[in-house]
Image 1 (cartoon, helix red, strand yellow):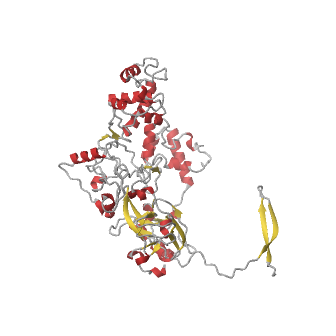
Image 2: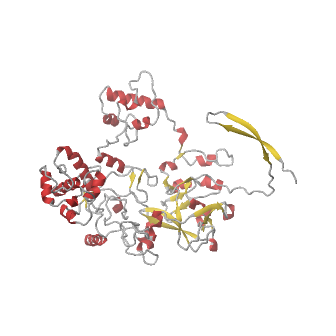
Length: 583
């Protein structure tokens, strides 16, 4: 028997204290005669499930030189397209410290208010928002101590930010509204898809419930202190308002009454409850008790007091006036009756009706007082439909008409024919909200209910393959990436021509200002779908409006067996000066 060849290898071990131990071991030498194919070329890509807004700075500032170590890359040609280099914008910490010390002396020694210093405009803005500006930015790094300065600690005398106190519900709500994305696809703060500051406006809404209707409503008690256990509501309310002590004749399992709404010690809570009820006016005491950490009966008395006194909370940052369009509790039929009544004598104009939204530029969700029928509404000005992200409410006249399908399909559903997904809360019969085990099939993109795919070597480098058998019109996924303008997309020409990889996907070829999704550096598994023509093509792209947001959905064109590569026709504009065989 032939003896296997061996060789020696050095093994180094490190213990927890950093000491190392070196030893020699014998290892067999294995010769592989069959050549191994190299892995297909690829570039790093940050995985994401949502597209990311690139920002306007992408068209002006270059952050780094791509392929800087390769002399074949046309560096000068690429740099000529930008106005400035990010690394040329140097930061001077000494200048920042001089500004901070000057602000400190003006404010502490000379008693000049920070708002007056801000109005001088001789420094960088002290507070751009509640968490940006000179004072906040300086707190993000170590404080620089220098001789002769009066200031020894940044946050000792200066207000770093405008973060509201914990007991300031109005301020905290206004603060979070500025960063919270109301789009149903996001519903999260600091959204990267719809970047930018949001409106802090939130309309007050009228209540459809009364103390009497709450008492007559059906339902089980939420606990021993539930308002439903009160036997005589009128006498109970009188006793509470007059702050009279009674036994548990009216309050079961309790010996004292809730505090009176007019009690000065509880006015702050009454104000907070008032804010909550102006936003969600039809909540019952059982729900509010969980939200407010108060007994249900106490909430009922406070809520009754507010309803009977018809108090309304108006604040410039949160609410301007009571909305007549924002009632989320109206039934679908009553909404339609209201629309027909209000539409008499006037017509609603839309340029994005049916499938024409594909060629329209979307605007920010509207946030204003009153109805969406004046120039203060951007949706009305641009003749666009309102969305659920708008602050006008679910029954606004400009909202998309809901479908009445039990099952949404291509033949009958107006939402499908209009190339948009059904809207939760509007499309009721098809269960767009997803409250059953069989939610509306026309909400797959917003629910991200896609079929699994596998990435491995394909017909051109890496490719995407079906993991399981699929029927026609199965949802593969949404093509995501950086959202670019036409100008920003043109800046990638030198890179795509050099590496022969083009991940740009245009939403609409007929709109010069349409969104362009670039999955070169940010994307998901759909970026690996290769090109296919004729019988090989088994996937098609569809431009869909999903909760007021343009998205590109990928769907199977026919039945696909497990293990089959998924191929998509890229379109004639994709190849440019290159042929498919060159890529």
